[in-house]
Length: 96
Image (cartoon, rainbow, N blue to C red; front, side, top):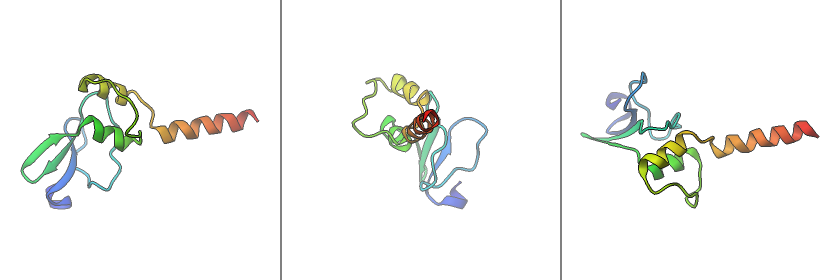
């Protein structure tokens, strides 16, 4: 990833994905366990709950459980708000 994206990029910590992705590219599926990590130079850290929440499009005011494991599980089982909105709109339009 470093050769393609420089000193700061995202990687999948586990799974079959390899090579990383730039920070300006969509994150990919947020799973119920920590999956995505931020590489900054020689350091690597897992994305925070707040970063995953923002990447999925949930507002800062969206309430999640206090514990990281429970919050990540909830996010990993969630539907991205914009997708949920579009599905609901399509269903309502189909009823009309």
